[in-house]
Amino acid sequence: MAPILEVSAIAKRFGGVVALDGAGFSVDKPGIVALIGPNGAGKTTLFDIICGRQNADSGEVRFMGERVDGLPPFRLSRLGFARSFQECRVLPEATCLENMLFSAQDKTLRSEMAGIFRGRAHNRNTVDKARELLAMVGLERFSNRPASDLSFGQKRLVEIASTLMGAPKVLLLDEPASGVNPTLLNILHDFLLDQAPKMGLLLVVIEHNMEFIMSVAERIVVLHQGRVLEDGPPAAIQASPQVIEAYLS
Ligand SMILES: Nc1ncnc2c1ncn2[C@@H]1O[C@H](COP(=O)(O)OP(=O)(O)OP(=O)(O)O)[C@@H](O)[C@H]1O
Image (tube, rainbow, N blue to C red; front, top):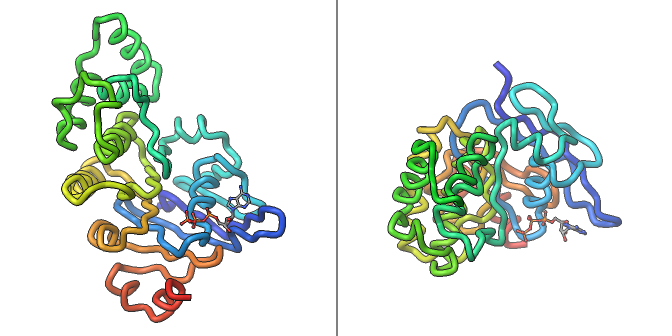
């Protein structure tokens, strides 16, 4: 069977800056894969290319064997791609529940959302799912409160929980642990470890918090200067002299 996600020989330049220089990795089964590397290694650019926000100069992205590079983000989203961004993107005036429903992707869910705004919810499943996900990140009591009432870390949890509303198959999280306090980080840790296998989800996570990512990911891909430097289980990556040198240089 074809890999879920296959990223091959991606190159990308910005003028004279080489952001990616033949980067690639392939994932066969659902689970949690980390994408790490020093600042400027090319991680976010690679995410942007995988989810259609930018085009590669060369290389391929395949999803279940089909080429998807060059597709616009909305088509990738329909195929089952979702992502979060480095900066937290929740709507401050909308309630936490509304933020969850905004993330719902298909027409059924959009019409549900309209129903909610008119004060009537037809499909309890959608709302129940949103409440259930909020409960899993410890925020159900904030369902009807505006997101602006939440701390930064809580907003981050709402954003990450909301990405699951569309039941994605590939979820790209860009620095989910950044700015999140240790208590909420534990919740996020358990949430990701619980949801990835339950939903049959491939989670690819960019993260600088090494303690967090080493305890969450089963596999670590290390980018350095636009190329994959190492790819393996956390223990092997932590012991790799090449990786240690890349971070120190
Ligand atoms: N739009 C752009 N225009 C010019 N240069 C860019 C652009 N986007 C990224 N770069 C450059 O490409 C390289 C890779 O950047 P990228 O943001 O992908 O790295 P990163 O690994 O995500 O870094 P960080 O960990 O700091 O977020 C860097 O040298 C960066 O300055």
